[in-house]
Image 1 (cartoon, rainbow, N blue to C red):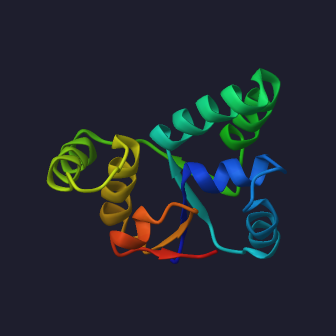
Image 2 (image 1 turned 90 degrees about the vertical axis):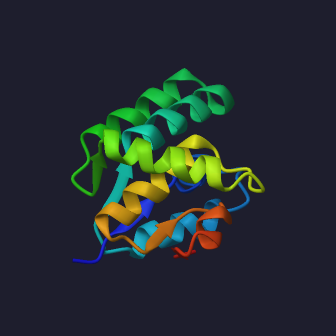
Length: 132
């Protein structure tokens, strides 16, 4: 079954109406029929960013929606994913990948995911397909 990974930048653009990618991301969400996958690391990073930029209430509301969602599955980063991510992080010293990005790459590879909702070009560099 085809699924789409959602990165922090995808979730954030959906929530923040001032984000330059908001309209495109929101339109994609409204027409999407594929199941969504994200990780606990992305959840953490997204909540932290939303709280810093938009406030605690907005972060809590987003967190509650995602935690109870039937449209998005929250996948836990495994020990093996962290090890694979560490290898990616060390290997690509010429890139500015966050460690969370590296865990996302590892999880996507483990789950056989090729599509990602993000505005982060690093995913394309790693061979994934950006859906927006």
